[in-house]
Length: 91
Length: 432
Ligand SMILES: Cc1ncc(COP(=O)(O)O)c(C=O)c1O
Image (cartoon, rainbow over all chains, first blue to last red; front, top):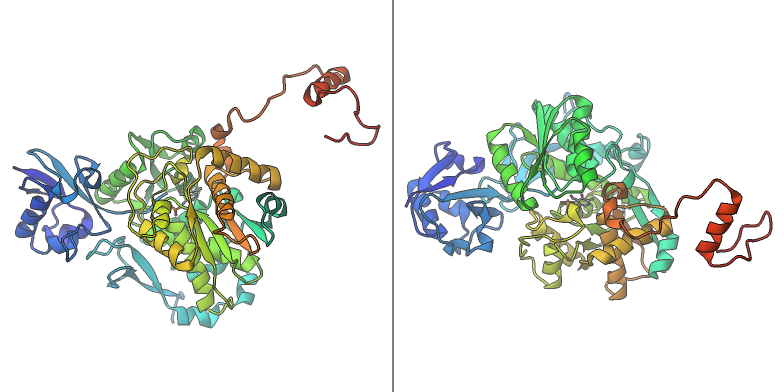
């Protein structure tokens, strides 16, 4: 299954400066594993030592925050878009 | 140091401690996405910054400029800040405060009547130093107004992104300055996410995205001013409204910096936070004794300026409140409206909903014994009531128009007071 993942500026040094990449998997967790295989080093940026998504990383599936769906177990389907976004200040 | 004095030296990851040079625009630590903070050379600052020097400068927020992250002269918002700190004796009596109660009144901040003018003058001055020609922000309203006005004042192009359901005055209050106002179909957190994506693609200076480390520092000036205006001392308690949770942490940082520089002797302030019941993720964390923030998916409150369901600095805000021995409250919308009216009736200050929440939260904190009525407390009143006046609809009786005759007024007077006697002797005001 091909999923498009939008890559924010702070991670682009790991994706040869590409702002979006393709990944495969049935859940967000699997997508992250696939990203780590294709772009080594990206995994530890997204998740901490215990495998939890880092406090300041926000992940959206088709614009919905995955914290409101099923976290890393959130199911993804062909054609979905995943966006990784750093937390930003309020206003 | 040769040339222009420079008292900040790097950006530093708040979690990782990794340092980044100042000549590039960065806003999160590359390693863990944690926020970046400005690193100062406090020894160099301590060598120059004295109470006398500060007091010799004009009454605006730039009297503390060594503690603000700009390299050259101030180019945006030179007159911002140094708003009144007023003793609120009548409000104190109404709330049962027996110690000192003070209002830090940013309803009259320049130029757009909220504390956001502080953060924007730093962010936009810095954006000119970086050479940007377009500025932008994601906003719950006040920030947008301030970015739009300050951009206009120096001829910067401006885009602001807001939730589409904002109060009409806050939308108009950006449009009037010629900004492109882009309403987004969804709550603030979606505006935030989109702004982050736009900031990555369009190379603009986003006040609260890529300029966040600079933006956030501007809030410290509210804390500096409180300490200076109290006569170089800090209050026992400060009550602060929270949205993203940035301001509250910066007020604490301001007191800490003054202590570090020897400008005040003691730093013991308990920090209290206020949010609305319909969007109170930080308050909920404090009440549960945790620093884990559970985001609110769909905020539901009249306090739109504070309606951020997933506060970026919520974790730090919750920790700062708890470590200081403070607490937090999240009053209902009717309590907020009552808070606005109480502040207006007692002190002659018309605050927006965020101010109402702050007064209402204070009332709750006093009632529950979390806030000591005998101590010295400062309320941060951060925005102006004329921007959110729809929340007061239906609260007042509007008298019907009368003929321009004394007789007509006598009739109206009797209607109001239910009596036809006792109009007072001539020259003496009638008691009401
Ligand atoms: C009037 C007012 N007060 C307080 C705040 C809270 O600021 P922060 O996001 O730094 O917590 C905001 C933010 O939008 C605001 O508009």
